[in-house]
Length: 223
Figure 1 (cartoon, rainbow, N blue to C red):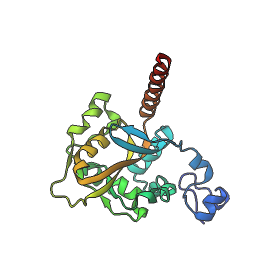
Figure 2 (tube, rainbow, N blue to C red):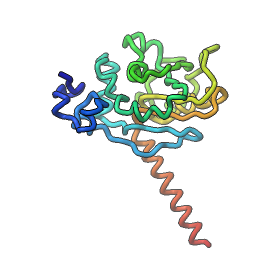
Figure 3 (tube, rainbow, N blue to C red):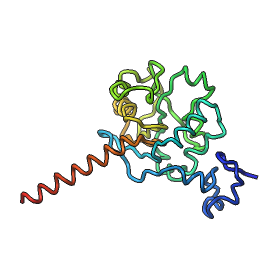
Figure 4 (cartoon, rainbow, N blue to C red):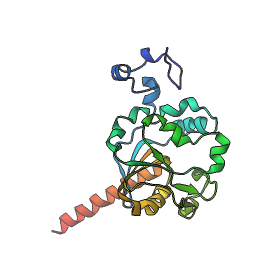
């Protein structure tokens, strides 16, 4: 009997018909509904970023339980229902954003690699963190300084071609920007997929969109 990885209810009785027929999810319908979808991509400078969910207290708690609580049974809940959608990137080289060696040793696993284990893709790790830091514990200015702390591994065998950058949480976009700068010479195109994005980045996107419409409206009035 398969059970929801969060509430432990019996899956067959608490899934939509699509979930039950194709077995695309390891969560029940109610638990999956608590994940808040993000429907449009973000543009972080020259990088197109596809965020799957909004970062909120619910998702923060699950990530903490998975990473710091070492609840590895939660690994499939994050990207599992998106595997079919991610097939569009099957010819890209999937690049994981770095986690510190200290954290990986402390947890006993690299969280992103565990989340994507069932993808069947080769997962590349060409970048590393010079120090162990956590974005959520830093101020806005300190978070932007992450560009000084991520470097590319020397002589790492990263194939040339299209790259897909993957991260779990996008807070300011600084990590992805740094990865884009370092890896751009190795690629034809680069896109990014993140599990969740901080609400402040979404608010900034809406603010930019509103400003664009306001500028466009003024230009029409001036004609």
